[in-house]
Length: 370
Length: 164
Ligand SMILES: [Zn+2]
Ligand SMILES: [Zn+2]
Image 1: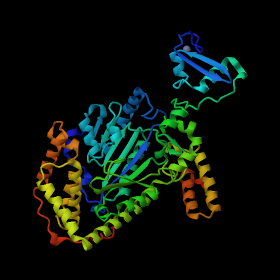
Image 2: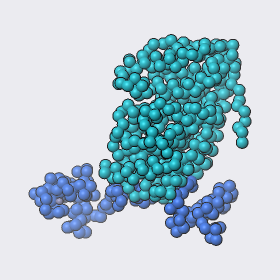
Image 3: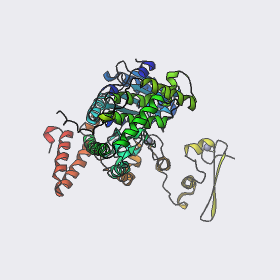
């Protein structure tokens, strides 16, 4: 099995690949909630029953072909910082990080699949992909689901579908989401309208780290709210259509900014470059905002095009637990701000200055290859 | 004082309630209070239920709170937390959930993936039945796209010789 140190050091597969619409959609994720038929759900089960379920499920999950040479750990064996690192990498939920014994996380080697045992449900399985790639993310998860279906008996009801602790997950137990970078819509003050429209059609909009988090770094997670009454493929197709529309809005907003307010764009990117390359104290929020502007600069031709990938890595690496684990000690907020600035200066040291003359509006991507 | 239920242990939980102008008292030991689910000392249904043992028809029959036979989840706890206790809870509380589900979801019936065990003929008869009713509705309402989908689904769930 993979060690925590390896998991920490190794970049996840999605960061190394360029999925569809990678300039706007950072990742696509699909999550399935499943429970065993019989035992009480984790939140209501007695501790010993929860442990029994974990002892039954953990070897089964570890034994899946997808999980070969993966990471598997009892949450009780991980300290708070390590658990937080997994949250920052989007591999476990904040809810699960709050748990200790009787809960486990199993993650595959390339970190594209993670399975939480005894979170709110007995199983929460997640698949993550680069760009807008929900179908592929679902297909990978569906395979795991199918395999597990042959090994354990899932709680299911012909009318309600897969049974979950919270009725909001009932039916398919599926939550599909995409993380969108929308600086164009934010700068042109259209983002609230878009969010309102998305909410109206029954989709949820959240920030970088899920429920209740602020929209930091101009990142927005769009996901389905309904899990019952539609097939998995229908849910995904609907979500995908909406996301494609948002992508178009974002491209149009960027185009309009470049055409109408080039100085505003250049100013934002230039300041971001200066701050990230030369600042010595950077709070998380400022760093995230500036990284967002740097990414925009890269998308619009002012900065190298391969910078986007570095930035996506940094969005995770400058989070508090990552800073602390890399420095191998617990840091106060001020120390973290200093270390964050240092990390950014080092990682961005080789980036050439912005070239205003290269500013160009976004081009519509080539039609997808079928 | 002795426990009114087991008549063995020392009573430590005392419930008093005025009902129809008469004061009713129930004394319970810790264990019995726990097994009867007395968390709230004002547990009206409990007092009635207990008195029901000895007083026969004198007490109006207040139905006991719905409780999941598999995990012990009560209607009150479900209402308070919004979470179910186990899969079997849906048998106990599911019937009254349509309103809730309608507000939360696109529909109140699952149309997605089905685990292998539930595909076994016999077990999913009610699902097929359910789908057939919806198919009739869809045809009647001329929702042909939906009807086609339902037909496919029924076909998936039924062995070839019995498929519609
Ligand atoms: Zn007693
Ligand atoms: Zn139950």
